[in-house]
Length: 437
Ligand code: SF4
Image (cartoon, rainbow, N blue to C red; front, side, top):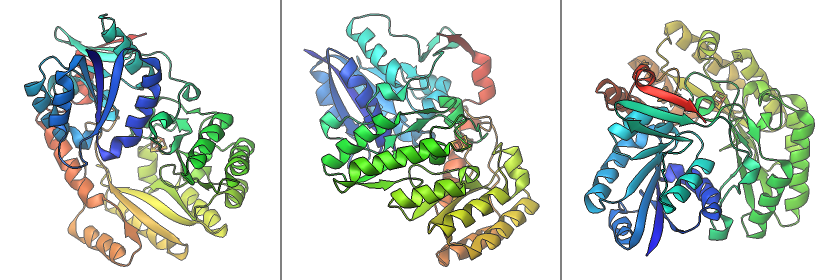
């Protein structure tokens, strides 16, 4: 009988699932690996149970985000009712942000805390050897305490393939992980620390592999693509960035490859948009659209949420990008709890100001995410008049986005937090013991 590891994920987590599989499969002996996407057709419980019944040890890992917790809870219950010997592991931004709720309310045995690559491989090897699996990088319950064994160092992206190409599974290449900005609403810095980069040779190698296999459009994952290779991930390093784009272009052009940079899933901060770099981008990239994270048209809000850039930086960035022929998608978030009528006025003034450029607005609603300094705050939902203004922009084709759906998600998360199903940061700190390892 074999040991089995089944990784379960939703469509929105497919890149993370690939990245994890690429990291663990080559390093773990004695396991067969299976992947199941839960939102393809129907819940894959029957298939998981069928595999589980023929395994010596069955380990089931979930990678998920906060808006998905109810579906994950449902699946965990169904799996438990059919496979009582399964070890259930949770990872991803929600499990790291609220390990206490993930263990006590969602019913997982163990949480992979933070980056999964090293921890998951060591965890599976420990299980295969019948060893203690509450290893460095995990969180678990002991007595009435949450124990977090937090890794002292972050991983080196160069040690891991960006996708499990041997399984013919590809995704955008993660070229940068972590962020030094620490915006108070975002999980990236709190879960992944300061920025690190995949080396240029490594990026070129895997890009070439993709295009040779027939995937002509090469995309990248980065919290701030224009900060690639720089000291803080924000103030761009023009030489390194140009060298990356040049080398990519040289190596994939002959196979018909195209570079998509600064667009989903690698947007840019406004204060990283500078003339020299955008000129270089224009020479090498195939996208005509760049996404910039502005988040608010109020300098007061930008200061409070710790963006470290101004509304004026956003206007300058838009102008530069337009000058080189890029249309600009501007990310904006409504609903911060301290957003008042003056801030909304400032944001609509900003929208008016950038009308002269070739732009679209990508609209979001603030969601209090576990693991962030704002996890215990409430969303301030928009009044009807503001909603009408937004609807008009959408009707004119000037705006798009999931801000409405995100209002519902924010309501759900606040309700689950108020009911004690998601733990507040205060409670997590009170109930946890952290060991650095
Ligand atoms: S700059 Fe972007 S990735 Fe970095 S913390 Fe802010 S929102 Fe998150």
